[in-house]
Length: 424
Image (cartoon, rainbow, N blue to C red; front, side):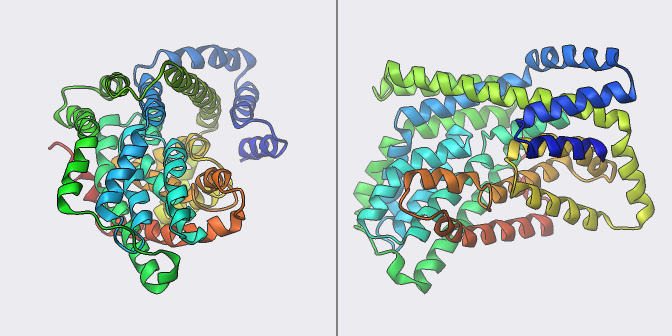
C-alpha cells in the first residue's frame, strides 16, 4: 500500500501519471530487490512493449480514427441519421447519439468522436433551439459509445495488459454497445416526453430520400463490415484488421476527395502524439506492475478474499465501485493500467470470465468519462460551448449515466450477452 500512496502523492504534486508510476516502480523494485534488477526492468520494458505485435494495433486504429475525423465522415453520418430520425421530437439528439455510435465504430476513440460530432451537430441543435442540457449531454454521452463498439482503443489496452484475446474483446463489445445506443435513444424519448420544450420536432423526409441518403455512407459501412468481419471470421488478427482499416479510410478519403494533404498530415501528427502518450503511460505501468508483483500484493489480496467469506458477486461490486470512484478523478487509460495488475489476477482466480470482466470495466470507463470532476467528454463539449457552465453539461449527462448503470445491471443479470456473437 505504501507504493500506491507514494504514487498518489507524486500525482498530487502534478507529476505526470507515467512518470509517477515509473518512479514508484523503479524505486520500489530497488528497495525490494536491488538497483540492478530495477535498471534491468527499466531497460527491458520499453523494448518489450515497442516490439509487441499487438501494441501496433493502437496507432493503426488511431490513424483510422483521426483520418476519418479529418475527411468529414462524421458529417455524412450525421446527415444520414438526421434524415431518418430528425423529424422526431428530440430527433437531432437521437441523430447525434446514432452518428456518434457509427463514427465511434470507425474511430475507436471517444474523444475524437465527441470533437468530430460536436462541430457538426451543436450548430444544428442551437438553430432548432434545443436546451443546453439535452444538446450537450447527448453529444457527450454519445461519444462514450466509441470505446465500447469496436474498434476500441480501451479494449486493445485491456487485452495488452491482461494478455486476453483482443479479437474476442473487440467482438464482445458489439452487443453491449448496441444495447447502450438503444438505452440512450430511450432516454432522449423520455426526456422530450417529460420536457417537450427542450426539443422541437424537425423536418420530415420521405422514404425515397431516406434510402437515397444511405448511398452517402455505403463505403463506410463496407469498410466497418470488412474490419469487424475479418475479426469474426478469424481471417485477420486485430493488428491486420487495424492496418486494413487505416489504409481503407485513407483511400476512402482520397476517392471521395475529402482528405487533403494537410488533413492527412494532421491525422498522422495526432496519431503519433497520442501513441507516444499511451506508450509512455504503458511503460510506467509496466514498471509499477513489476514492483507490485514483487510485493506479492495480488496474491495477498486473493488470500485475504478467500478467508473473508465474501461472495464473488460482493467482490465484483466492490471492484466496480472502486472503478467508479477512480473514474471521477482519473482518465480511463491510467485507471486501467494502475488497477488491472492487482484486480485481474484476483478476478481470474475466482473463475470469472475475463471477456465479461473486460466489457464491464470498459462500461465503467464509459461512466467515468461523463462524471465530474474529470468527465473528459463533458469538458471536450464545453470547449465547443464556452457560454455554457460545465455544471449544466454535467446535469445533462446524468440521465445517460443512469442508462449506463442500467446497462451494467443488464450485463450482470445476463453475463452471456457480450459473448452472443463470439465464434463458437
